[in-house]
Length: 332
Image (cartoon, rainbow, N blue to C red; front, side):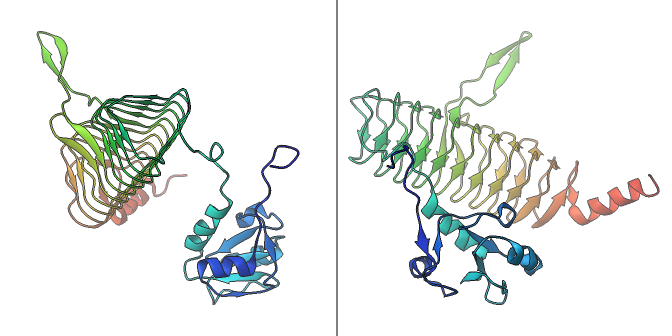
């Protein structure tokens, strides 16, 4: 810590980064870099990346001294780290410059409340005001940040991160390396009622939620527990902020659910499905593998064939674009 209370600035030479990530470079090996940035940020001393040759002139004119590029993209006057996927390498390098999270994040804060029957690995971190219920199991190296509530019988795997103000209702299951951003709610009751004599009677929600390995859930998203069995999010699926998954939803692996998506009850998503911003589905539909639904699309029936879809009701994107062009043809 410096005298002004700031953490010391992290610096890496071009040669350091090339060696760490096993890539080639050209330029001054002793060039020091103290962070990463985008081309438009134009920050001296930082490393940026270039995936499109059309941005070469902007990169060359910037004050940024070094770029991650593909071998065939030269940037006059700039040092380079060479990689076929510049966006991938810059993401790895950015992790070196990530700020600390509440200091070293070790041990259990004195205000944490831990049930006697809970089982925690020795190196689990619990922040201030964390509550851990009966029968909870938490795996090695998992970090639980302040004001998180983990109710009875939840199971959390290794290397998970649960950020502040998350709630895990009873019997929720998190695999390994799961990340919950602030304010996530896992395992709340599904929206289930039956009408009787003009009044709405609540249907008990007896199931639970399972998040498989490497799932990330964005801030203030909600995933409801199942009515009888389980709501399940498949391995590697990434969920954005303000997404809602209703009871009994099942997703495959490596799906992308973008902000304000709403998936209705008992809907099933295949592998590698992408639902762009504000996509909604009706309940009890199936979306097959490798389907992309563009923003604001409405899924009202099964989508079995891979491809890109758009509109409400949903159509193949090419057909939808032609229909929109015809609809607005001649209008000013």
